[in-house]
Length: 263
Image (cartoon, rainbow, N blue to C red):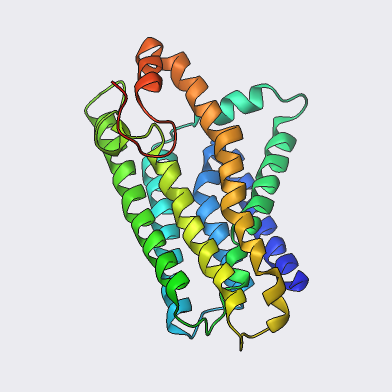
C-alpha cells in the first residue's frame, strides 16, 4: 500500500513541477487548475494498479476519466487559453513574503499531495470489485454529480456571456456553489465504492481491507478545502467585486447544499 501511494505521489509531484514551469512561462498560475483533474486521474490509476478488468471497476474508472476530461477541458478552454487569471491566486500570492516562484512551487506541490489523498478510494477499488448495493449507489452518485456539475458550469458560462453581474438562475438559485457541491458528491460516490471493498473478499490484496475506511479521507479533505479555503476566498472576492448584490444573494441562497431559496 505504501509503495503505491509513494509511486503515485512521485508521478504527481513531477506533473506539478511541469505545471509550475508552464505557469511561469505563461505568466498564469491558473494553469494548475487544468493539471488538478489530470493529476488525480493519474494518481487514481496508479493506486488502482492500472486499468481495471472487472465491470464495476471499469465503470468507475470510465466515470473518473469522463470527470477528468470534462473538468480539465472546461478549465482549459474557459480559463487558461483565454488568459483568464484567477483572482484567488493573485490574492493568495500577494500575502507571501519572499519569492513568488518558490511560493507557487510549494503551493503546487501541496496541491499534489492533496490530489493523491483525494484519489485514495481507487487504492481499494479493485480490478474485480463485485457489484453490490453500495457500488450501485456509488455509480449513481458519481454519474449524477458529473452531469449536474457540468450543468452548473455551463449555466455560469451562460450568465457571463450575457454580461450578468451575478448568476442566480438554474442550479445557482438553490446554491451559491452548486459546482462545488456536486464535485463533492462525485468523490463521495468514489469513496463509497472504495469503502465497499471492505465488505468482500478475493481482492488483489486482502491486507488492504482493514484500511478501506481511508476512502473517506477523499470527500473529507475536499469538504475541508471547500469550507476553509475555496468558498470563503471566493465569497470574499465576490463581495469586493459585486458588493450589496452578492450580499443579498448570500442572504437568500444556501451556501453549499442546494435548497429552496429564502424569501
